Structure formats: structure tokens, C-alpha cells
Image: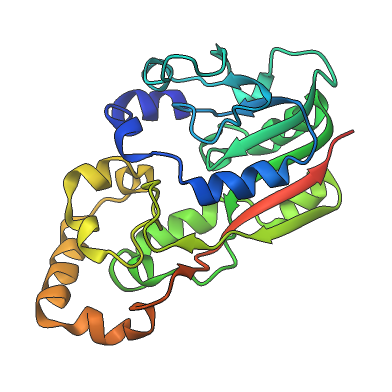
Length: 247
């Protein structure tokens, strides 16, 4: 269950998972003119737009505890059973949380039920080839993510017509999710960084990949293989903003 996972790994989560202002702008633009927003799987409150009326939904006590003073009011509940009436909000929002829900289909149906105008979901496209970390060092992560992240066709089957917007990740992204350090490979060697990335808790063998990465960084092999990334300001790592109309 997502609440149990984040009650275990969520300690200190808010320190490394700070909202990146460039991603926040893209999310805010995707919400359009919606004034009332329900943030489903809200965690510690990253990317909750301050200029809108937001209600957060989060199952984990640990994540709720880390919400900063002045953040949106939060309801402890599951995405599968949102405690709101039909069309209660102009928009429903979810930021990199849907793949942790116990029943993603039911959660998407609930988001559609409670939103009048639009649904905005930050997710990862499992048809993307992945980036160097998961291709070269942790293929088990790529295999897991391809199983747990819905495909774009899955969103369409539940929500109807969608717009899938590429969300390029800046090289100095402040939000420490899996792909955030694509141009700063040494950061993945830090236990504290990995502790804030949920997928690392789901693989059985971490040390082997870390040893290979450390050796390739020391030898210069990583730099040679990834020379095209050296000066790239952003990278398409497969993160997508899925935008659908509400009821």
C-alpha cells in the first residue's frame, strides 16, 4: 500500500523533493483557469498552486506530517475512494503518485468523478526507452516501472481524449525524483538521494549497479558514453503531463 511505503521511506522526503519552479509553471499552465483543485496523492505538498483553492488527499501520516505550515488543507484518504461529491472541484491533479495507488483505474475514475473541467496528471510513459541510469545500471527499475505506470492508451480508455505533453527535465532540477540527476550521476551514489526515490526500495539488488556506476565515473567511461548530455539544458526522460477534460 502507498501509505505504508511512504510511512517507511518518507522520513526526510520533503528535504530532497523540493518543487522545481520550471516544472511548477508547466503544471500550473496545464490546470488552465481551474480555481478549485483536488491534489490526489499529495505527499508533502509539492506543486500545489498557491493562487488556487486546493484540497490535498494523502494516505500517509508521514507525508502529511511533513507538509509545511500554510499548505493546503489535507484529507487522509485513498485515491480509490475520494470523500467528495461529484463535480466538487474544477480540476483534479496528481503528481507522480498514480503508480503507487492500489487501484489506478479506480483512482482515475474517482478523479474524473470529482472534477468538472479538467484532470492533470504528471506521470512517466512506459513506452519511453528510459535513460542511462535504468538502461545501463538498474534495468530492474525500468522493468518495474514499465509494469506499474499506465500507458497513454490506458489513460484514454478511462478518461477519454487526452493531451500528452512532454515535460523536459532541467539539468539542475530541484525535485529529486528518479530522473532528476540525469546530468549529475554522482548524486545517485548518495544513500540520502536514493532514499527519496521510491523505486529503489522495490529492487532486490542495488549495490551491484552502484559499483558499476562508481567504476564508470572513476574511469571516465560514463562521461564518454554520455558525452551528448554534457551541455544539454534539458532532457526528455519520458515524463509526461496528461491533460484530460472533466465530466
